[in-house]
Length: 293
Length: 130
Image 1 (cartoon, rainbow over the protein chains, first blue to last red):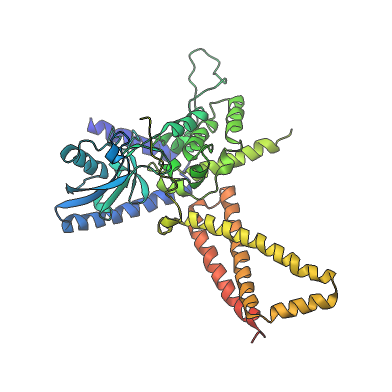
Image 2 (spheres, chains in turn orange, brown):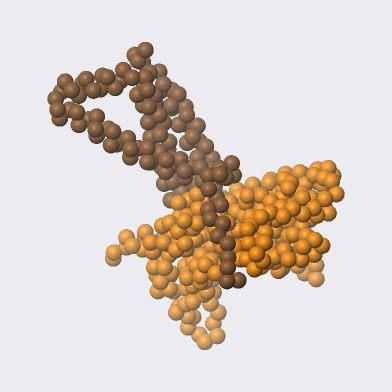
């Protein structure tokens, strides 16, 4: 099983090398990320050695159903520290051992399901992807900002999902191949172009970090626009569909609301170049409207 | 589930220590933009004294230029305008998708260049006020 996986990985790498090279932004970002990881690895090693047995976490608490808990507060837990412990591990420990009413969403614990995005030490991060040893203590864990809190760390995601659905995040085409059983082929270059856009896990970190989305609840927001990019740039979708997609994102509360603060790009746990996608869609929208022939 | 809690704006200015380069660039761009709009009104007001008479205009300008605070404000105006221009170029590049990887560095470069130009302009602006 393991050999098979390695082979596949190697094959994928060769493929990527064959087709279009990575954009310099992406390379730079990944390189920066590698240096950052290296540094935090060193720091976390140091801290693991230094750190006392327990780590202090402060968790935002709110429960509308209990009269005494309707006023939001922070609860402090002292969780036994283990090497490799993530923030999610810490809150799970607190829930399992200290207070079973502590509520938060989590599922896969490997940064794929996108349900455990929290506001950790003043930044939107995935709980399962964030090492406790890399953070300053006490670790402050809050629900995502700019979304209504339902209970403790659980926020209301309805408006985010609505915005996501608004850009029709599914493949649609009227440009079908001739033969009945022909495949819908996509070139490698095109796949590379939309690759990062396909990585979105709908965690709403970007939406929560965006200042504009906070002040304008009609603004589509970073993740929905990037999702629109992923399909609008897909060459297998016909021109009509692309026009239709551009009509959605070029409206008043669409791409034009982005003020390029780069907040979303900075917090995205999947390293999606959101601002880059939004800017490219802006250019596409302008091109489409200037085209009068 | 019927009830939920609105925490309001979390990312307000109370969190300025955590703002990133792009955020600061945005704040400074808005701020300098509004300062420039405000300046245009005072600019028109001062120039309009020329409609009363040439002497009035000369007198107004001379009395304004003799004030130290006006000289300081002029340096401020220059730095505000320079930053707005430089960051405007940066935003243009961002809009064109050029050099997105250096958007934070270009913001710092704009800040440093603004500072240098403002300092270099001080002798010119302060000349003759004392």
